[in-house]
Length: 148
Ligand SMILES: CC(C)(COP(=O)(O)OP(=O)(O)OC[C@H]1O[C@@H](n2cnc3c(N)ncnc32)[C@H](O)[C@@H]1OP(=O)(O)O)[C@@H](O)C(=O)NCCC(=O)NCCS
Image (cartoon, rainbow, N blue to C red; front, side, top):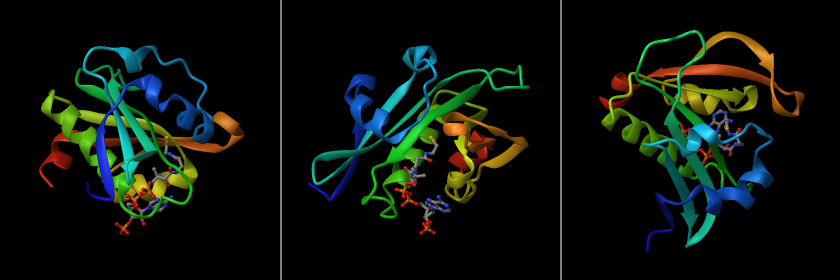
């Protein structure tokens, strides 16, 4: 077993860690839609991260093929080892394989560096999101990402 592993899990399995790490109180209906992927990030067999992606129309973009990265987080003490990047790339690959044109997300401004690193760009003005923290809408060209 390698130290870090990423594999599909149920939304429920991510629940406790997700509640602890994310302030996002939005309902999860879209995450249960057909095609959605939920990933667990494991370190030495222990769940320390998660990511979810599902088809969902993007704000201000009525076109087809939009997927939303709904949540991604790695527990404190396990960040900076590449697990977040592994999960994000798996999510992008999954969406692209199903014909995604773009992938979008609403993220705290503090995570922007991570998303920029993976080819996402800001769209529109910052807004106040969960926890009253500044958030950005970020968008990536899914096809371009999959060619990297
Ligand atoms: C964002 C997050 C998931 C990244 O996970 P991670 O496992 O630490 O990320 P990685 O180790 O794969 O980092 C990949 C690259 O992004 C960079 N990076 C990671 N987080 C960053 C940040 N907040 N700002 C700038 N760069 C960042 C790393 O330096 C690394 O760059 P490198 O490959 O050149 O060294 C993690 O910091 C986290 O859980 N944050 C809190 C939750 C959150 O804000 N989620 C996002 C929206 S739901």
